[in-house]
Amino acid sequence: MATTSADRDDAAGAVLFDVDGTLMDTVYLHTVAWWEALRQHGHHVTMSRIHRLIGMGSDHLLDELLGEDRDRDGDGALSAAHDALYAQFWSRLAPLPGAADLLRACAERGWRVVLASSAKKNEADVMIRALGAGDAIDAVATADDVASSKPAPDLVQQALAKAGVPAGRAVFVGDAGWDARAARKAGVRCLGLLTGGWTREELRGSGAEEVYESTEELLERIEDSPLSAPGGDTD
Image (tube, rainbow, N blue to C red; front, side, top):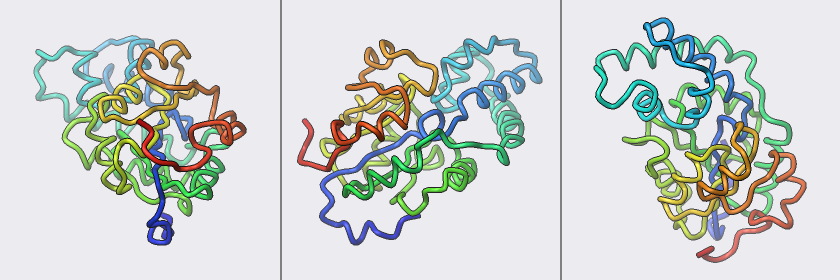
């Protein structure tokens, strides 16, 4: 983790990054893990339906797949099965091209860099090690820090609190409509990436201000993007 935030007390803003699908190439790994976990417990759900919900926390994801009126006694076992299946990929997790460089570029420009992940803390720790950019990260907010996951705004608000900046001085970067909706509810502008399988139109329709092909494209265009330098309130 970066130890430079104290040296940047005058930083005017923060960039909040989703992790799965935004910085790490993990969306389809989660899809497979949920598909198998559900099958193990007698629920046959197509991967296409599951993929569209990656980025939500398990609470909202299971509501969407199995219905809000289901017997919730099995939710813990389903979530544990997903975690065990996904953990099999931990040694092979890979960041998206340019992800670590993008975080460092934001830090170098004076932004406070905060990760906002719907993953549990132990899973987020694994991804951060695989990402290899701990020197650029000021703080991390995970599912363990909040009562409700995306698309609720709780995780974005927690990330703002850890960054120590108001919503108007932050930008959220994510790959799913759930990211954009959560950011919008928290009053934070959002940039979308196409790396999670959502279309440009879907991300814009969910509230993304601008959409980029990848972390690499955002890095290449950073000087012409809202991440060029921290400024005053973006409202």
